[in-house]
Amino acid sequence: MEFLSNLFYFIVVLGILVLVHEFGHFIAARLVGMRAEVFSIGMGPRLFGFHKRLGFTFGNLPKDFEFDDNTEYRISLLPIGGYVKIAGMIDESMDKDFINREPQPWEFRSKKPWQKFIVLIAGVIMNFILAVLIFGTIAFFQGQTLLKTTTIGAVLPGSIAEQIGFKPDDRIVKINYKEIGSWNEAMEHLTFKQMGKVKEILVERNGQMITLNADGKKIIRAIADKKPLGLEPYGIRVVLQMVETLKPAGQAGFKKYDTILSVNQTRICGPAQFSSIIKQNKQKEISIQIKRKDSVFNLSVIPNEDGKIGVMLGAAVVGKTERINYNLFEAIYIGFDESINAISLFFNSIGQIINGNLSVKESVGGPIMIAQQASQQAELGLISFLNFIALLSVTLAIINILPLPALDGGHLVFVVIEAILRREIKPKVKLAIQQSGVILLLLLMAFVIYNDLTR
Image 1 (cartoon, rainbow, N blue to C red):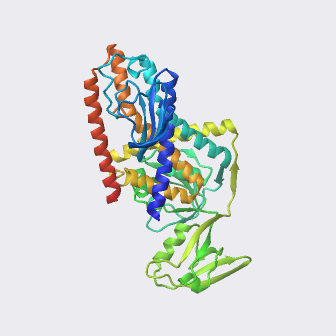
Image 2: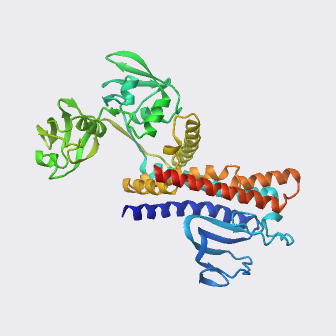
Image 3: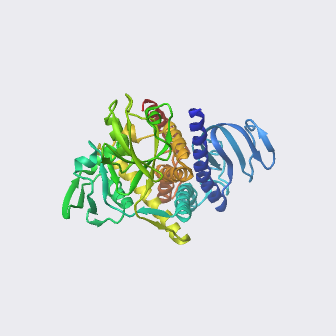
């Protein structure tokens, strides 16, 4: 069942991204007078499609079929991408039948360099626009809720936060000389802002100002290893979303919607802290103070050998919050800003991999990882799923613009060289480079799939 869920969301995500990307190439080609012979969702053998002259047909078209000025829209067997076949262009289809014919005015090779440039860059632009629209739409309808505290409620033992020197009740004042006004801002500056760099953190502790220094590389490694930063804010309460009747919590009398106040007299300020304490007390009796409606009382429970009591945790905000709503123009700006931040995050992550702070194994993913992440984000809700699509759209745009054969960036290199030389590069040379690029991409695909499987 999990496999089918992963496969479904993988096809949905990839279908959206490919459709948008290839539509960019398609519409740009049509606007500058090029023939777009095929618009395919999926790769490999043709399953079925529509052409104005033929109508709907199944299977492969005749080899000598003339597309004329009408595009054939098709669905192909392998849901791993898609393409637009533009007349007179040497691309990943390796079509070279036109090479020995005189260039036609509707062909890619007959157009001016600026027209070729527009067609090649259009897919990347559409992916970027998709990300801006998604981020902007979320901002417009969802707004933003800020937790208006910078006071630390709890620090997890053994966490990176404890190593930095944070203590409960510290109030974060500045990070790298930037005034911090909310918990959201504090977490952003501790993690992804100036990624991997040393963080100078000014905190107020017992009325005194203290400076803490955090190694940004250690923070990034902790995130990559899926370890929590170890900070819980003041103003969050843990609420039980589900209690398993036959597990320790159910047998001890815990009920759904109970609010956890403390464990062994230690104040609880978040789910990660609560889970950490439970795991540290495997098969030991602990006293948990809870609030149920208007009553406050203690219940004793013994976590099992796995350090669990059989509950599903949720969080309720009891601290001060600020709701920010955005108008249309503000939302578009936020969408653009978030897309730029996603580009910055991509290159920062590459830099961290090169510096050895992030491992290739954990950071580089292929189809399997995308499918798993897509399914997980969908389970978290529509907003998380849309955010995932937007981030992936930006990543697809960046990868496609790289100056590598078989990618849009590789084709752009040919266009620039031809514009400088004022003559076309020999088709045989283009074919050879294109073939090497396809082989390189296949090897890269094999690597990322192997990486997914071993991870």
